[in-house]
Length: 199
Image (cartoon, rainbow, N blue to C red; front, side, top):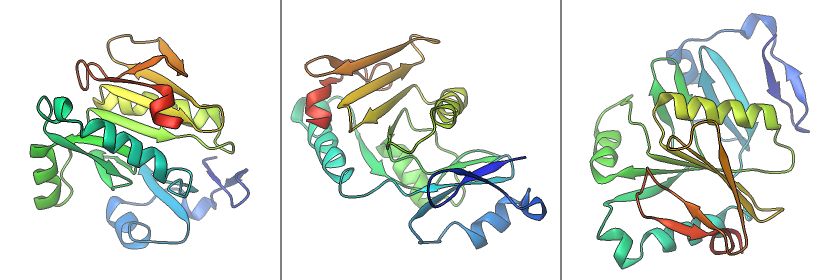
């Protein structure tokens, strides 16, 4: 049986009658819902988790934007880091990553074309203590399978960043302190230390 996260972050079964909904039904019922949860849609199933954008995530987003907006970076890459925007990543996949990097061209397409499928080159998820490792890793695999080049998992509690890259399939790098977290091949040549991201 498919499961969702309940209010206390333990798994709870989805009611059998609501096992499958169409994209159109999801858009009407869940896409604009603002109740402290993040709703995603994968293969006809609603995935419900607590919204992760809060006081602890905002400084991380600000730091990442500052680092990405440095002159030497903006001259090399033309794009934006977005926060919690709704994305169609395939015919049967809707996700709302904590942060995602898009080129200027992709941003234009997302803004002008309804249900446009645009794959970010870099996805960043901020991991909270209640997140289940199995579900987080399944989401990472899904991102890489649809064409995301790099996924960062940020662990604010331990001040570490885990890096998944299509350059090194099946392997990850765990960064902390002064270790550099690489964003290649999503943003070739771009890397920042873990302490610059999470302090």
